[in-house]
Image 1: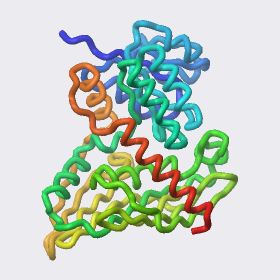
Image 2 (image 1 turned 135 degrees about the vertical axis):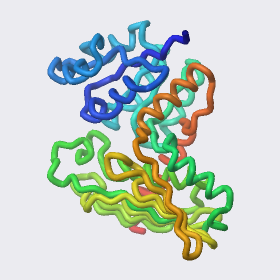
Image 3 (image 1 turned 180 degrees about the vertical axis):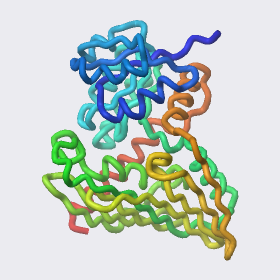
Image 4 (image 1 turned 90 degrees about the vertical axis):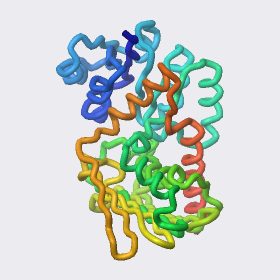
Amino acid sequence: MTQPIRWGILGASNFARKDMAPAIHAARGAELVALATSSAAKAAPFQDFCPGLQVFEDYDALLANPGIDAVYIPLPNHLHVEWSLKALAAGKHVLCEKPMAMAAADYAQLVEARDASGCFATEAYMIVNHPQWQRARQLLRDGAIGDLVHVEGLFCYNNASETDNVRNRPETGGGGIPDIGVYTYGITRWMTGQEPAEITHADVDFENGVDVVARVSARFPSFSAHWVNSMRMHPIQDMNFVGTDGVIRLTAPFNPARFATARLELHQGTVVTEERFPGVDHYVLQVEAFTAHVRDGAPYPWTLEDARGTQAMIDAVFAKAAAGQ
């Protein structure tokens, strides 16, 4: 029997407790064995569904344990590079929450550390593991909507009342673009295989040093794009790929099951074909794909280089906004 990949988690965040820890525990080929937190109260809910979980009081102690093969890092954004590098230096495979770095230039040291360690490291960009997105990309590549002309994306929620949320704090790398712009921008790149030629417009509203509403337009080599991301609007998720002969629309593209059932619409003339993907957990699929890559060398759909490309877009958006354009 093949030995499972043994996972540890650095930090007992709410997201880790509700989503990623259960996903690691449920994933085939993976075993959740350790958690690093100094809070017994925060560790208890993890131990409820994962009896026998070993709890370390600090992150370094977990990384020093030879019985752990891979770590998941759900720490605040400003800590991602530091602890990813420490994990790689300790010989652990790394799955780190997005954005894995706060500037594209920071990826150079991550790539260097990955290559030097011989370990796998990537950003937790779970959506590319979901069958709705794999199906959408195949439809686009097969020419189901003709030539792509325009991409339109929305991903918004309202956390204005959560003043202590790390997303509302500049010192922890907060902001709507780092949190959800990575999805609208990154999935456009992943779907099309193109990089933006120019960020043509960036209208960004800030509060307390973090972006809360961003209206961004870009030109790619063969299509245009416009995205709205906000932490001050009613929740909505919608992605549209508009071509000469049809439209691919996803109505729960980023947080299916929790937001709504994953649904893909293919519009061709007056005919609309709908595909649904109920009961799919892309967090579990992400862990299984990561594990298969580490253990068997299976292809993995998102690399550090992919993440760096999205961060380069984010850097360009903020630069455009700072220039008042």
